[in-house]
Amino acid sequence: MDSSRLFRPRIIEALQGYNRQRMAGDIGAGLTVGVVALPLAMAFAIASGLKPEAGLFTAIIAGFLISALGGSRVQIGGPAGAFIVIVYGIVERYGYANLVIATAMSGVMLFAFGFFRLGTLVRFIPVAVVIGFTNGIAVLIALSQVKDFLGLNTGPMPGSFLGILQTLGASLSTINWQATVLALASLLLIVVWQFGLPRWAATKPWAAKCALVPGAVLALVGATLVVSLTGLEVETIGSRFGGVPSALPGFALPDFSWETARFLFIPATTLAMLGAIESLLCARVADGMIGDRHDPNQELMAQGIANLVTPFFGGMPATGTIARTVTNIKSGANSPVAGIVHAATLLLVVLIAAPLAKNIPLAAMAAILMFVAWNMGEWREFLHLRHYRLPYRATLLAVFLLTVIFDLTVAVEVGLVAACLTFIYRISSLSRCETASAQDYPLLAGRQDAVKAHRLHGAIFFGAVKLIEHMEDHLPTRVLVVDFKNVLYIDSSGTEAVQNLLLTCRKRQVRLIACGLAFQPRDILQRCGVVDALGSDNLIPHLAQAIELAVRDVQST
View 1 (cartoon, rainbow, N blue to C red):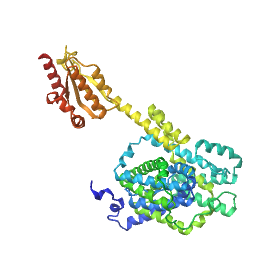
View 2: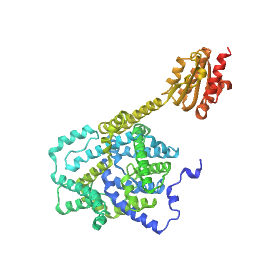
View 3: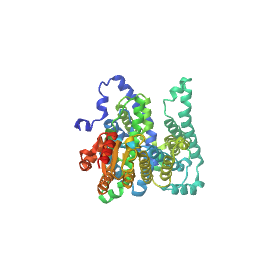
View 4: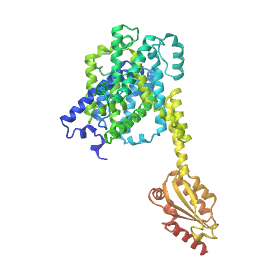
């Protein structure tokens, strides 16, 4: 492996031939994305059970590191909605100090994934599993925002689905109608701004200019002004968290023990896997929009560094974010410089305008996250389920329900196991054995009891060894011919089955002739001694030649 390619951030190539025009596009895009990321970063942190500044610090530090060190030209990193459920659960169960440790552990895992070139393996996770847990997370995000959307007085919210339902049901009598109306107005404004303006932009120039301002930012500013001017009795960032600090935090190392790390291994693995999936899916979407191809391994290493560093500066888990990346592209970004500008923009906001955040109503933040949850889910897939086979439907629905009702980790584990079993079944069903007939090979006429010839197709692995075992149970009296020409792959179980077939043939004094052995099947049988045990006289290139040899052998005795 070329050491120069082991760690090579995309920014090195992107800056080649860099000019003022490209810089202007990157600066404009970075400023736009910074404005878009501001409300989302705070909302994701609050929904995760953290203070709003945790989201801002993550968007700044992780956003900078992912852009500067990543493998994509335009991907924007930061806190993501997909992490809300997991982070909330970790904070509730283990506390914030252990979230820091779990996030850092996930960073080490992500860096290892990229360093050992495992980035492409993430693409093998089935679509049904990804859609199932994505829609499940979206439901949980929306459900977690009902409290602030309605202004309920619930106290600390549980992390489980049934617990949330029970707590919300018991607190409905405390509904704050002022907060509810404010949240509904904010959500309506976001929806109209998001879907209405693009339709009017084609005919009305003012709509095209207004569409440049993100709906979430407009709703946040509008709701804050309403609360400040009218004195509505709604909960704000200031009333719950005391405001947002106007400086970045210093380095803080939590208490660490190997005993704690052992309990946090599963949550950290979940964070790493989800971060890898989200970031690489986002990078693929970006590639399709700009006609580029990202480096998945470099992207994972950058994600790992960001998640290793950020939590020690008051941050939370980070990954690639599709909404902000798409905004970045549409705003004219052409290099990672745009992501760096986005981080710098957020830093300036924290340093200059942080005191203004205390008046932001949590009802407006809940409305923003409700909209994010709706956009995050792929709800049409539920309508399309009838077009797919039962295993796909069962996997998607199982992962979705397990994510909502139980736990994301359990859901993904069950989904992957179900997908693997389905894959094994389908591949084994594609592997088949055909018996050569006397019609195709006239030399076999009248000799079917003495000579049998079989063609194997597909992969001979642990799910298809029954094909070899069937031959072993129905041996001819003199010669068995096995054609491996159409065999793509043989695993250790398939090799053992061939070895057992050879031993059984020797015990019953049946000659075994193999033909068409090439590439991987021949290589593994060579390494396991099967080729040498057969001998060169029993290794024939073509099936017709092997049958002719078998018939001559029978006629000579």
